[in-house]
Length: 186
Image (cartoon, rainbow, N blue to C red; front, side, top):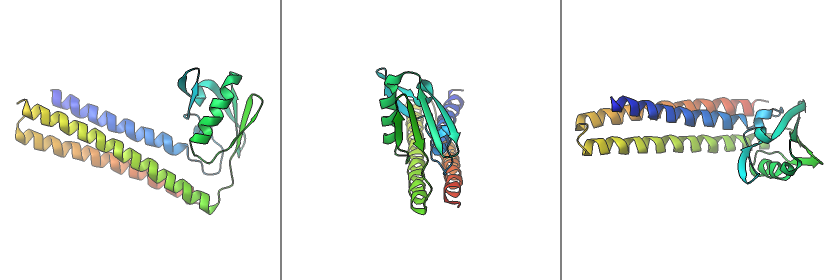
């Protein structure tokens, strides 16, 4: 039935929003260098937006340094700009065709700032989930208006969508709590 397909699409869209939050949370560092901190940042190169991992090799020569080696030296400036505008607390330093980012020591103030950033990311996730819910409810209301489903079915579907929404928001909250715990541990 078409309704089951719509519910599966809603669940898939919410899962995608959760996965996006998970990957964004991985970009928040806890004092140890990791390629995941910058690999998904978008740089404007070759007239299009590309992830850093698609245009450069990212390595961690030691526990507190990220090293980015663009495959094309014209990518150095856009990569630096992407890292700076991401507001993840890294300052890129270029040495010809090599970019280095030293992970700053985690002060208590910086940890709290990263927790605030994580909370903002989580709220963006909740907003995305609410948008998916709103769109789904509009589809179901249109189906009811067109006579494809009855009012009782609409109420049941609204409850189903709300349950999916609550589960997705709970998942985002779990991710946020885990990230906060990771950021605040000394």
